[in-house]
Image 1 (spheres, rainbow, N blue to C red):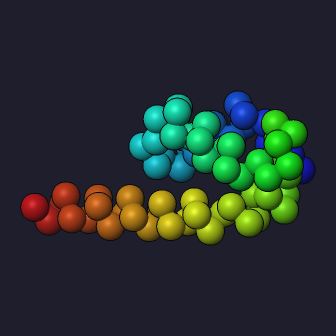
Image 2 (cartoon, rainbow, N blue to C red):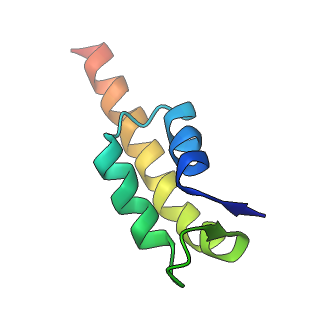
Image 3 (cartoon, helix red, strand yellow):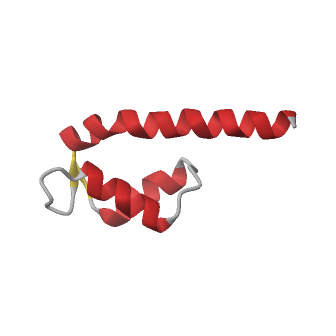
Length: 68
């Protein structure tokens, strides 16, 4: 399995992290360790923890906004 730039954008937009295209590009650049323009399974798995942290942060911010 490999994700290209468009697929990676679609994935991150689908989970609604509220990231700009530039931010997603930066994450892609960071995840693509071998710089082949794709994120393979191992790269994604290694990078996924960062994505989970972002999801948790977004959920926490969303909960704070609802309380305020």
